[in-house]
Amino acid sequence: MLSRRCCRTIGLTVVLLFGLFTFVAGAEENLTAEQWMARGDSLSQQRDYDSAIASYTKALQMDPQFAAAYNKRGLAYYWKGQFDQSIADYTKALKIDPRFAAAYSNRGAAYNAAGKYDKAIADCTQAVQIDPMYAEAYNNRGNAYVHRGKYDQAIDEYTKALEIDPQYVDAYNNRGNIYAVMWKFEKAIADYDQAIALDSAQAYSYFNKAHACEKLGRNQDAADAYRKFIEIAPIDREQDILFAKQRLAVLGR
Image 1 (spheres, rainbow, N blue to C red):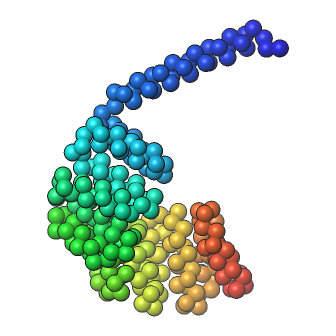
Image 2: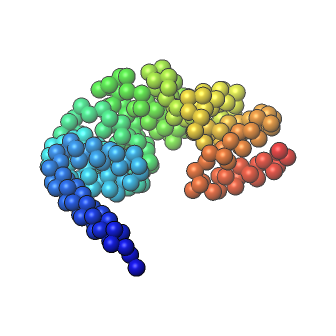
Image 3: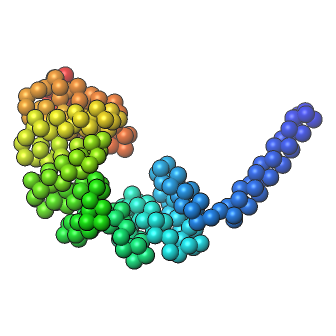
């Protein structure tokens, strides 16, 4: 049997929780469009994209001319793999603000993912015309050139991105990948090493480095990189982890 003290504690907790829920519900009613967008940003960082989209939609219901909220909702759709919805939101943002460089760059990335590479290049070009120091747009345009088989132009784009932002890990990885495709493995490894120096939690920097080291016969370096990849790779990358383990077996390491 519960003691009288315990019963009182449970009753008190229920009252407090009821009051908390009432407060949260009331607080939500008073949120501004900017606050709804900030909530969406927080949810996106947690990869809760459905809830983020709902928050951005709330912001847009309050302010239909909120270009930044369309851009952010487009990003959430992008990460869900819903590229048509993503492109539609970026387009709405650009109708409101035709000089929104980020929306052009992001729409370019979505066009890239949708296989519309010429449109991707056009959007990224528009982004850098608006903001010539926008490193991400050069990186995205480089990705589109890769899909077009224009590797030298892609390398130029990644290099430009890195001149603007020397801490741009993705640009190092992307440039390294193209050097590897071109069989320039020493340059590829140098870029992967730079990416790792900037962010040692980037699993695929190690994976890509391991492949390049194998091509140069640097088997111990390859094995070390595969092991690090296995250690930090996301658990949903089972096939890549299995491949890395198989390569370690082949290398006898």
